[in-house]
Length: 126
Image (cartoon, rainbow, N blue to C red; front, top):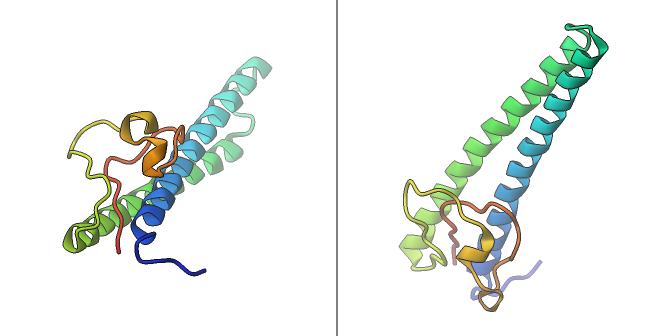
């Protein structure tokens, strides 16, 4: 896939935001499943049925959380590269809550709308 140097910052930023949103969505979906499984076994009146399945699901959630930490490190690395090259598209403030896409970008800027929760720092490299 060919990419113009001028397209790289925006595309990296968009892909990073999508990856972070997908990871967040996966965690939310697994949490919903965990809640459903716990409610189902309570309704069955068997407090330990499916315990091994629930333990595996929790391990899966732990893996997603670890992946989120790794993705945050990727994010920080891209921010550093973007700053060094003067290619930061959106530099979110430190220690601020994540905001919806509508608050971060307009369609004219070429960033996705309605992606859900976006990263605290959106960066790009050239």
